[in-house]
Image 1 (tube, rainbow, N blue to C red):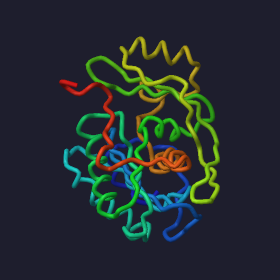
Image 2: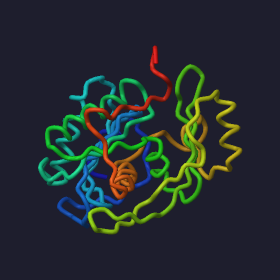
Image 3: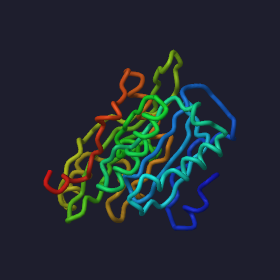
Image 4: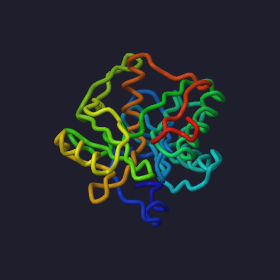
Length: 246
């Protein structure tokens, strides 16, 4: 997949393949610049409707939003899309780490304000559930440190949304278990209790907590179909555990 080689060299585990278009391919719908740094890896992508035009997955160890800008430039170049062609900014708001979650959100706010276009924040764990590619219940167990996990579950499957007068086939995740912070034993008990078809995040289960740009945009399109967007001046990140002093 274009733009994934450096991540592969660093040992980032593979994700389910998204439908990636050749540069210049358009299948309708808004053109969205999506980004998320709530996990140990940052993802940036350009998505047109239901098609990924370009994506990058990299380690993002730094604390500065400038760390994402080269990835954004690479994605725009790979998609042959100019900044002024972007219709909306999509950003994963977490839950995630204090530093990582703020990084993408700060970058997204800057682009939305600078370009005068909507910003749509989405749940990073909801997108990760969709990224699993499972029709059924996907449980997420995010390591929140200090011996605790943030656990949530979603029923995932096909969906259709209407945005800008155009119907698009997407995927949707309906909450089955609202996020809760608990010890590992309680997390595993909760997962067993809902009969999850796939579990992501608990040691020994399937894969890391990473979402590609397309699932991020699926969640955003659902919000956009309801007329929802965020105020870049007030949208805030969601953390995997309450911040110090919070």
